[in-house]
Image (cartoon, rainbow, N blue to C red; front, side, top):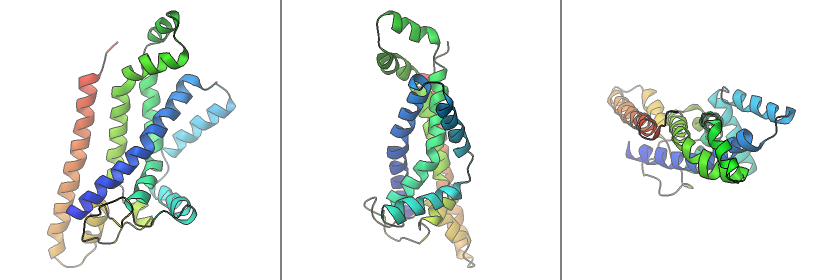
Length: 223
């Protein structure tokens, strides 16, 4: 359990480091700066479609791009995190755009009236007010990525790893893949191990969701 838990945390760290800045910056550009033309509309449609793509497709994409093209170590937390980052990216973009859209226009107009540029309005006024919604959507996206198995099986994170990885470049496994491996074993002793793995995974997922609810209630502003 410990090795798989450490691998899950490393994968989530890579996923967050990859998907959060790209997703937030993309959402800010599309919502606040991008012109309303056919290209932008096509990008928005594709982002919404990517959010509904089966997760195993992202596993095939990670195998083709990160492993076969860029040579990222197979079965490592790095390739697993990048693959889950691709899957989480549309969710972060959609939730961030919704949080930005929820900020009332009078705040923007008041900042413009004081002589602020568009970037200053976004940086100093819109982004701080929308940050709770952005964090909530990000945590929910990470919780969904935490429970994914199919894309990680495609990139090789299914083998049993007895020792916890010390870096993102070493071979690792994650809790959902470990539970899947134990559940497929015919021996009865693995029933208890499977149940224990499920309990640990559920505890982590509940913690992430509770954190999202806490952040929303603590920092949410009602207009």
